[in-house]
Amino acid sequence: PVFVQAPLVRFWPWVSLLLTAGWLAIALRLRRQPQTYLWGDLLLGFSWSWLAGSLYWGWFRAEPLVHLPIEAIGLPLALWGLRRGWGLVGNCFYLGSLVGTAITDIYFYLTDLIPFWRAVMQVPPPESAAILHQALAKIQCLWGISWAVVLVNVLLALGLGTLQEQKLHWQAFSGAVLTTLVVDGLFWLVASLA
Image (cartoon, rainbow, N blue to C red; front, side, top):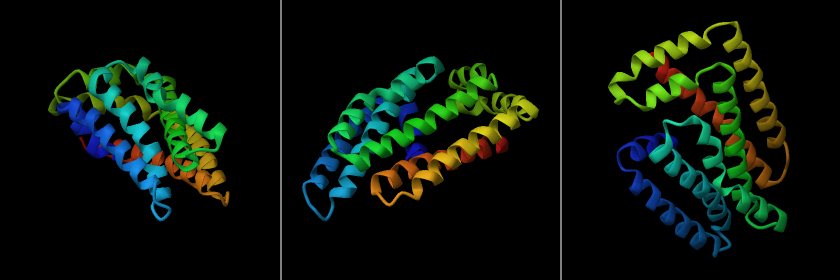
């Protein structure tokens, strides 16, 4: 979804934001039927991630300091739902996505990539290749590689550890955490090829 939402929010942020209501409506409708309940529950958690992505990448993308607070917009509702045993699959999916986002952001801070983040977000996409190459050069050192190894292992431990749980909500959490590795890897590959 991030590869669909990323260009959408860059050019039509209001459309992306309004789609959140559509995702929520579909999720609530699916949750009403026993045979589609789990899909609705999962889509509900996805809706929180979509909402946060719409807000951040649509209007605040050049300011990394507010990235995680905006991504955490659904956190109070997710924690409330977990406490009440409501929407376990969707809430765990959202929390897994949030954990993955937090760990990715930590990497950006540890490797001093924040200036590159800001720069890439302030230029037209065709002009971002040079900035991405500078950012890659910055992380292709012992410090950058070491932190990448540490944080990838943290994500793997969280993802694979919870994947072994026999409950669907933990598997949803695991899937979201492990997907972070796939998405981050694809972004790294795209940046390398730019």
